[in-house]
Image (cartoon, rainbow, N blue to C red; front, side, top):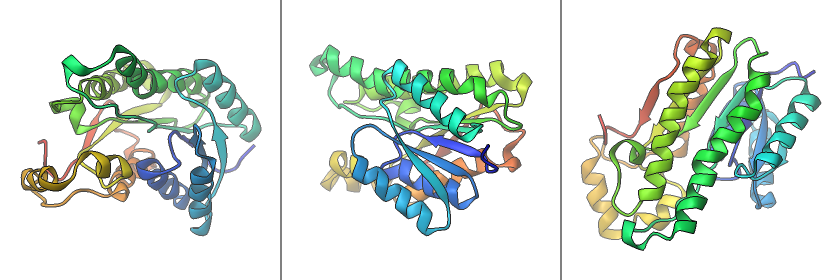
Length: 247
C-alpha cells in the first residue's frame, strides 16, 4: 500500500491538468497522470513533477469510455492500495454557433467533459469512500456559469459539472468525502491561445478586473487547497478563479 495519498488527475498531459499534477505532487501526493493519446506530453508532466521531488505514474485511458475508466481505476487502487483524490480535468472544446453545431460534436463534447467526469466519479467513489479524507474536484469553467456565444456544447457540459458536484457533495458527505468545483476564467493554455486572439483578447482583458489572463498555476493552487486538510469543511462549492470576470 502506498504510504502517500494517491491522486488521479485526468487530462494531465498539458495545460491546467499538468499544473495540477505538479502542484499535488509537490504537496506530497502520489499523482497518477492520465492521458488519452499523447504519451510524450504525459511523460513530460511526470518528469516535471519528479524534478520537484514528487512521485507519480502514467495511466492511459479515455474518460469517455466507461469500461476503460473502470479498468484503469481498479488497477490504480489495486496497485497502490488506495485512491484518495480524483481531479476531473479532462476536457475538449469544439466551438460553433447553435445553428452550425453538428450533433456529433455536441455528443463528443458531452461524452468527454461531462460523461467522462461521471464515469470517473462512479469508478473512483468506492475507493474514495474508504479513504480517511476522500476528495473530488471537478474543473468547470466561467462559461458554465455565464455562457459564451459559440460554445453551446462546452457551456452545457461545464454547467453540468456544477450539478454533478453539488449532488455528489450531498451523496458522499456522510463518509467525509468532499466534492467541489473549480471554475477557471480565461487561463493561458494551448486551448485559449487558439480561441482567444487579437482584438478578442484585448477586449477580454478589459472585462477582467485584475487586468490579466490567469495562469494554469492559479487554478492548481485552488485545487491544492480543496484537496488539503484545510478544506475538510468545504463541500458542494464552486471556487471561481477568474480575476473577477464573474462575481
